[in-house]
Structures are given as structure tokens and as C-alpha cells.
Length: 151
Image 1 (spheres, rainbow, N blue to C red):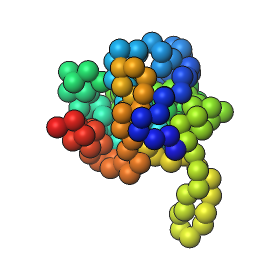
Image 2: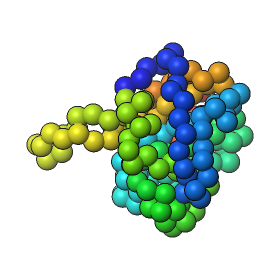
Image 3: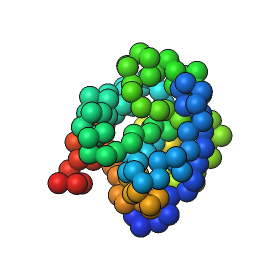
Image 4: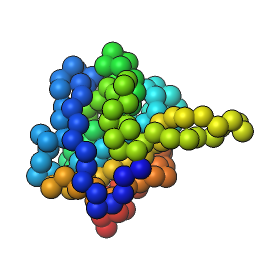
């Protein structure tokens, strides 16, 4: 997983509206880049809704919010519509962005070990460097977790 101080890898992917979104288009702004495993699952929904419910505060603090998962554009479209998500959800079915940020690795569930997406958030500064990394995301209060880093 990438660390604080490292250059954030450039990326380009389609969002739920089939718009191409690139990191470079947000130069000069702080980006909250959050990786989540799957659309419309309990933890991922709580995390997205925490960010949605605090979206105006995020914007007022100068943040751009971008979600990334291996789901398709069509899946993102349904998820965003169902929960009225106001930020782009980037489709990364080939795991290019996920792996570039090191958000893919070994996980354990019910005693079994497998490879999967590591729920994580990277805050990228105005110059494209990773300012903060949240490796232990609290899905219910993720926005507050981000705000606490800047108090």
C-alpha cells in the first residue's frame, strides 16, 4: 500500500455516468480517493452514505471525493442512483487503480485467506502527493474520520 509522502499514481477511469475522470483534472485541490470492495453491500453502503451525508462539508473544506471499486459502470450507476450519491464512482474491473495504490492484497474471513480489495482511503494534496492514508476505515463514520485528520 502506498504511504504518506509518496506521489499519487495518475489514473483515468469511467464513472457511473460514463464520464472519464482523471486524477490530473483535480490538480490544485485535495482529493479523497476511497477504495471499497463492492457496490450495494452493507459496509460499502454505510461508507458511501457517510461521505454523502457529509458531502457539503467535504466540499466546503476543499475536498473532491472519488470512490473506486472493481464494479462496472452499470453497477455504479445503480448504486449511485439508489443511494443518491453525489460524487463519482470509478469503475476499475481490471484493478489498475486498485493495484497502483496497493489497495489489493491478502484478506481473511471465516478462517480462510484470499486476495481482495483492501478498504482504504488516500487523501491526495493539491500537488498530487499522498497526504494521509486511512487503512482502517470506519464505515459508519468515515467522513468524520477524515475530518478528524484536519482538526
